Figure (tube, rainbow over the protein chains, first blue to last red):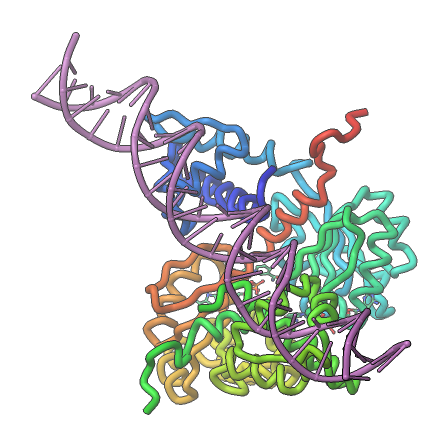
Length: 212
Length: 212
DNA sequence: CATTTTCTGTGAATGTTTTCACAGCGTTTG
DNA sequence: CAAACGCTGTGAAAACATTCACAGAAAATG
Ligand SMILES: NC(=O)c1ccc[n+]([C@@H]2O[C@H](COP(=O)([O-])OP(=O)(O)OC[C@H]3O[C@@H](n4cnc5c(N)ncnc54)[C@H](O)[C@@H]3O)[C@@H](O)[C@H]2O)c1
Ligand SMILES: NC(=O)c1ccc[n+]([C@@H]2O[C@H](COP(=O)([O-])OP(=O)(O)OC[C@H]3O[C@@H](n4cnc5c(N)ncnc54)[C@H](O)[C@@H]3O)[C@@H](O)[C@H]2O)c1
């Protein structure tokens, strides 16, 4: 019922609302939220429609109540347990970023093939062997994984995650993964993003730019 | 003339073509490329239209020539010089990932405020103080930057980048940046991506799911 | 050498997302 | 207390992106 981009914006709104709340703001208008989010007021109102919350014309949206409604719509649990597979350079950065420090997502298990890493606790998170994958994911009821293994290993590893019951994968490897329809895969492809930046950053002879 | 998503897919096609070429493949059909890219054949053909390349009905697209054409369309230079600002956990992972190892993008300068890092060479890349920003970017003709500083520093740092002549920013901080219209900003927001994954991974009572 | 096959390139149709524009309604103002 | 104001919620329009469907062409087939 809600598009992918609406989901993304809703999570952004919630983050912004959280900030506003910390600043003691109690009410906010669609155009203010829009400004903060880099969207239009109409867009914000549409997005908020889908969560089923209603503001008042007089005072706009109530910050706390709107956060609550967005949460009710987006979240299946107040805190999501996440697994990380591939504790390399990127994986360690992700651990440092999320473990302890994040209130919505908690990386509760890591996995790697490297025996220098398995069995140890890295950035506060235990690193398991892949053999333990099914067992640990089941025990902790983990449905979401971040995948940060080398590109050549990504598909095979994703398969194992799916077999272990994962239904959502955030994939950092620059590879398109195949997965059954009931599993959602989102790619974070830094190179592709950079290509877009490079394109738009132009130096581009875009239309009628000077040729010499 | 070309949409943002077309740009992204073109860069993906190029990567896939590169792989095909390494495997000795000389020709490829739209539906094969589509399969690899997770798109439809019609989509691939549309995308390729915008770069102005034409295949033949008999043998599809010539791998080398198509890569060439995509490059001509996307690239302003065969190798893009990129700056990295913020050499923390994520910054170091990015350095390790890109320095030397990538053929399209080269991180040629890093910047940080931490005096333990400035003046040193990290993962093969010299780390400068922010005071040197303008000078170094000008000398190396850098127009693109990756921004990996803490959220609270992101806007201020982005301003300095813009002043130093940067026209494209890949922003990893979970903050919406304001920038002049001629500067392109793309956000890589891991948290937002995770929220989307969590949503779609549903544990969600989506429509008519079992309730007990 | 006619026919069938299979592909590209693209106009048109369809589907999706964003924006417009305004009715309706509390609040403020004179 | 009536008028003016500024906001929300939302149908309808516009903009944008994807898919369909087929003409045209090169190769394979008989
Ligand atoms: N480092 C970055 O900033 C960055 C940026 C963009 C994309 N990526 C992508 O992210 C992925 C990881 O990057 P990285 O820099 O951390 O690489 P890395 O080589 O530092 O780490 C890879 C880790 O995965 C482990 N591994 C290998 N095979 C495995 C398997 N089958 N199962 C489990 N673990 C396995 C390795 O032991 C290692 O610890 C790569 O696909 C890379 O292309 C990284
Ligand atoms: N680590 C991750 O995996 C991850 C994931 C998602 C988002 N992020 C975001 O990326 C950014 C960086 O994350 P991190 O984990 O590397 O943080 P970090 O704290 O490890 O590193 C931040 C670095 O930026 C430097 N810095 C601080 N202020 C600066 C300034 N004004 N100019 C230049 N450099 C400055 C610090 O000295 C430090 O080296 C943060 O905004 C974070 O939210 C990180």
